[in-house]
Image (cartoon, rainbow, N blue to C red; front, side, top):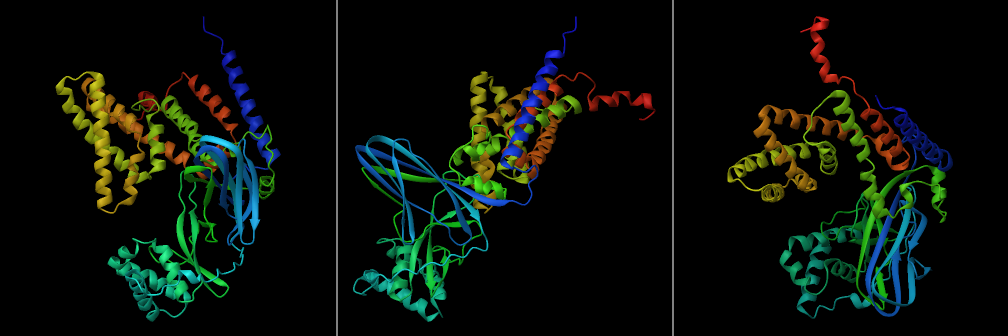
Length: 503
């Protein structure tokens, strides 16, 4: 007796109802658009502070950014259970201060700021006062060497900005002197000191490179040089002038990034995510309370958001695999290996990923073919293949670095264990079914991976999956529906071409 399909359709209907309701509510209640259209660009930046408390009163002071050129601060968020918190606004500087009567062991504090991109925003900054005690007297060998660099740069400069640029060039061209001076203090501090010597207001600032989806991002030191009321930023290592499009000043008053009383061994890491937010939702970001029915990833810490931004694309790739295998009839090596390949392509790039995959699997098959003659046990054979894959990736990475192919270094994003199992499966398939079946399944895997990659990198798909978590229930309903299909596959229809008179 054929089982009833009523439970199946009931589950599918329930999933579609739940997913559609959650998606509609998210759109109506929070004004999240269906299409990635004209919106406000908001960078959500989360600082993770870690330190070891010594069992005594703890006070943590952390520099935090404010509205500045190109960026408007719209919201602050913190997570610090058990700690008191205050935001200290002093002339020209903002700091967050946490305090607790007693703490011991590893402590973790979170600070998050939402910065809206405002290209026309211009906030003037007061130049720093010249620091007299930073001026050189020329008595010691280091002072003499530094003053010589300054003298050479002054001859080739016309104003404050060109002096800063030529001074950095002098450090780069006279590497021996630069290495000698680095024994006392960093290059950026020498630059500030030399510019002060030439009566040029300058200071060190801490910059954050804004890259979507980055985790554990450090700050970089830049040089801020003033010429009257105008200032310019300089990279102290390369001399490049100006701020990059996605660069933001985090600390820009020559203060300490982090001061801790009652703790030691501190670290600060930054996680960053780029969001396209409707104007009405920008206002909502200024509110601290969260709604229970706001089923969105935005309520998570930024570090977890960056992880979920990729994870939520996996069901889309899985749906592509189900469609290509059930309806089209393509055979793949492993059920969901194409999804992992597509995710690797997203992390690397399409052409680097394709070339890397073919080279790794091809060389791995040759080595696995030799291992088969040694009659090893399965566990030992797989272990050898894993080590081989790691070795191949390491060799490719070193060669890419030596040849200056920086993009090829991203080949390390490939899932090594899955690649090892793929090589093992293909090798066994070669021995049992022949080379033809290996090429059919590996070719099918690459075709499905390419289709999944194109779908998963589509801007509309990325926007919908990240902003409407209810779509996951709809994806599940579609997968169940496809799983109940028992008809002919598209590639099987060629068997009936004789009935149509075609050859």
